[in-house]
Length: 260
Ligand SMILES: C[S@@+](CC[C@H](N)C(=O)[O-])C[C@H]1O[C@@H](n2cnc3c(N)ncnc32)[C@H](O)[C@@H]1O
Image 1 (cartoon, helix red, strand yellow):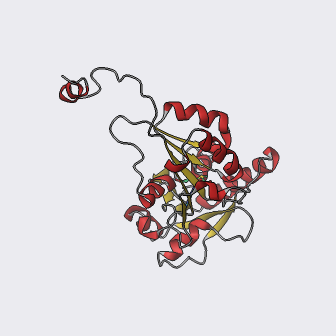
Image 2 (image 1 turned 90 degrees about the vertical axis):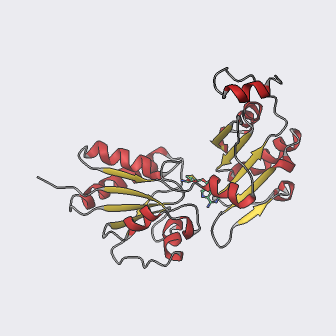
Image 3 (image 1 turned 60 degrees about the vertical axis):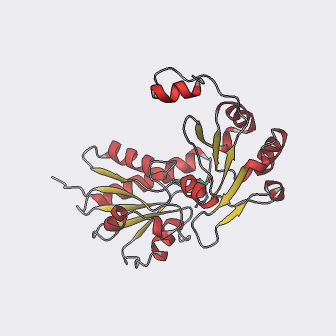
């Protein structure tokens, strides 16, 4: 009977190797074979570069897996099937695999999907997810923004839902994190200007990497081609809040809030 290795998703944080957790660092040095994602064959891997900046040599047998950036379902389907089948072949040698993940492996990451498809092919494969620092947690720290405190609400969405949805969410959430903003920067700026939120929004590109960029003057980004690795943290300080349910706060806090 085939003894399969374990599939480990190692979150590496968004760019600064100091944000790689000890557990991920240990997994990288455990003798497990490295797999890292790229968009095209032989293209540089952002995840691999984080580890290299941390001072670890890339093992000679580290392998790339290609996940093309396209919405073409057929091309995507073929690439995913190839990546999953190859991962299963490698696991069938009995050696563990460590899949390098930029940011956090449970947050909009290729790893979740890869692990699911591999488990569909071979249910016996053990999967371990090593959590990590997400891009927006690092961006909040880098800009000095608090994502949420006390009763505040926080939403994290891909901007691709469009400005109509973002507009609606701004009525419901005190902070809205917009990921994958690249194609929509101008439209989002227009919305934020209309809602008078330009001054409380930050744009962050490649957080943690040597070429990290923070832009607070959002209007200056108009017409610019943003990098794929960029996000916006939108704070909405004037949002009207609803009532909180009784019992969700301590009695003392509730009395203070009620002015008693
Ligand atoms: C596929 S998601 C990956 C999210 C990642 N797993 C995480 O935990 O943040 C890609 C999007 O996350 C955001 N992102 C990821 N890494 C980033 C970075 N280093 N700097 C800024 N934004 C980043 C961008 O919005 C990008 O379009």
